[in-house]
Amino acid sequence: MSTDFEIYEMEPADNDFKVELCNKNIIIEYKDGQPWLKRKDWSSNNYEQKKIKISAINNLSIYCDCSAIEIFINDGQIVMSARYFCL
Image 1 (cartoon, helix red, strand yellow):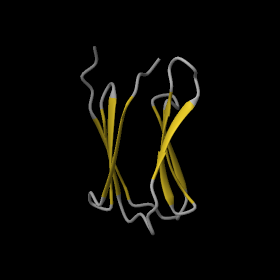
Image 2: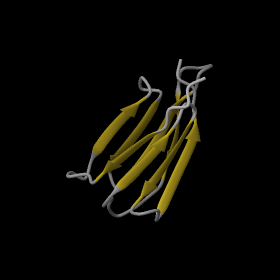
Image 3: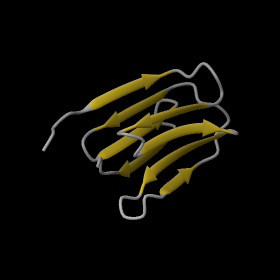
């Protein structure tokens, strides 16, 4: 079992962006004023999605390890999380 822990810090230059992690099993996307967290379902291979409305993203902190991801938007104004499995 891996104990790797990764931290990504972003200050998006554009309104729209897309970040793909863990062989595209996790996708973080901002489009049309909404941050999206997409997670690939390991049994169906389809993406499950969460989204929320926000006026702008000033900064983004992503914390992930071998099976969980936490996303903090605008210094924690909004937090999104998910469990995932890298196959």
